Amino acid sequence: MDYKETKAPLSTITYNKEAIEAPTENIYEAISVIAKRANQINADLKKELVDKLDEFATYNDSLEEVFENKEQIEVSKFYERLPKPYAIAVDEWLNGKVYFRTPDVE
Image 1 (tube, rainbow, N blue to C red):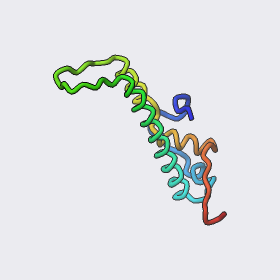
Image 2: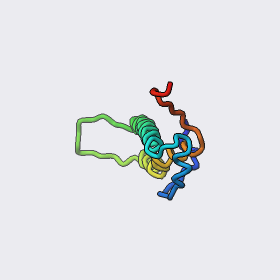
Image 3: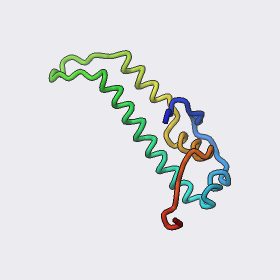
Image 4: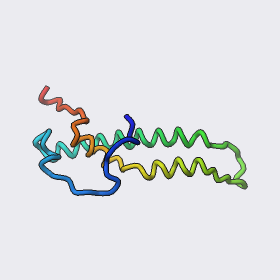
């Protein structure tokens, strides 16, 4: 999924409790699903960032020289400006983009 195109808010906002719990009819279950999705998003973003930063990695044993790479700094700043994983997860939840199931019911 492309998290760069999300419309999730960049800062903390207040959500309607009824809208959050509507799909599950249980606020605790809804928060649990959102938290698990936020962990998935965080892992995806972290993997993507590490992969991009590995392109700039220089492997030498000398600690004397540390190079400042402007492209690497721009990549890091871009990922810092993205919405937080929990905001993306809540946005997906409210828009019905999260699939969940309860094994006890099935």
